[in-house]
Image (cartoon, rainbow, N blue to C red; front, side):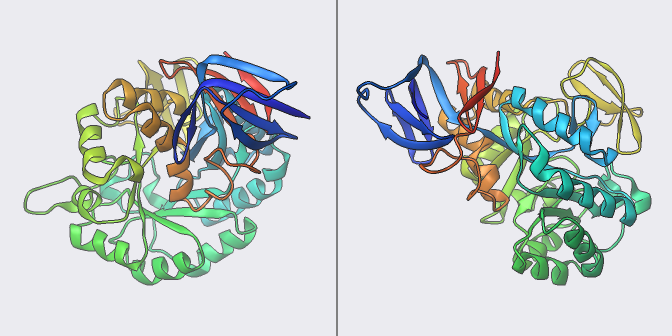
Amino acid sequence: MTEYIHAQKFFFTTGVKEGGYLEIKNGKFGAYLEEKPAKATIIDYADKWIAPGLVDTHIHGYKNHDVMDNDPEGIKVMSSALLECGVTSFLPTTLTSSRERLLAVSKTIRAVKDEVDGAKIQGIYFEGPFFTEEHKGAQNPSYFSDPSLEVFHEWQEASGHLIKKIALAPEREGVEEFVETITNEGVVVALGHSNATLKEATKAVDAGASVFVHAFNGMRGLNHREPGMVGAMLTVKEIFAELIADGHHVHPKAVELLVQTIGYDKVALITDCMMAGGMPDGDYILGEFPVVVANGTARMKEGNLAGSILKLYEGMRNVVKWGVATPYQAVMMASYIPAVSCNIADQCGSIQKGRAADFIVLDKEMNLVATYLDGQKRFEK
């Protein structure tokens, strides 16, 4: 079956095209036409914008389910519900836990990957457990350790080689060998939950690390005599920075500083969403810790932020509202750039002929109107 989407704007990786017609054929993107095709079925979004389906590369949970629950049905619920966030691809994200628990979760995600009916699982993100305590956030320090290739390969084997990204602290022992080895195996190494110095962080990047975990959060701050992790993120070339653009984790002016310094094309919007996303205020669990959700934030009992309850399209909308990015840049920051940062851009994050027709419809205020998966409308506001 062939249909054409007509809209005011289309967001391609090469730029914005206006007023044309995008072919959807058998669930895949086809040609983009400037003129209306004759005798065609037209889906008319004449005053709306068409963007690639969003890609959330750092998300722990949604709709009262958490990846660490190790529950296949819960991951299926997450997948379906993420369509209401404009997300069509994601990396289920773990938390620091025991070697055995992480092994079990790896096996579960592998088993459920092709059974989900909503946002597509494009891999797994291991957030930990090779962290240090000073900036532990909601990670359990009792499981922290130095990186081990033997242990990582055990998890990777169990996952069916689905682990696309793993985060660690640069100051741990054996980091450089670990980073170099698994980077050569095609796994992205991210740096975070760390008190590393500029020198330590730079050594990890030189070994192959390429992403900084949730910019400014869970990392040694910028000091004029010791630039630390934040200084490395802002000055080391050719890295990506994850960003939680909810207005709570990072002040809009700090977001502006990040984008102006490293460029929008190196900033990957994420949610770091926990199980309370899409749920009412109240008491929840993140990993093994109780969390209170109120006033738009998720906090541990002592008041520290613990993940977010952000929907990814909201973060995309926020950076435009704050004057930090254009609509085109914001769309790329929530779709193509996260995909590139995790080496999954060959699967998702852009509108390309022959690619699965996963896309979203936005209004001029960047509100989500509809989400399409494989050419089928699966969510509508």
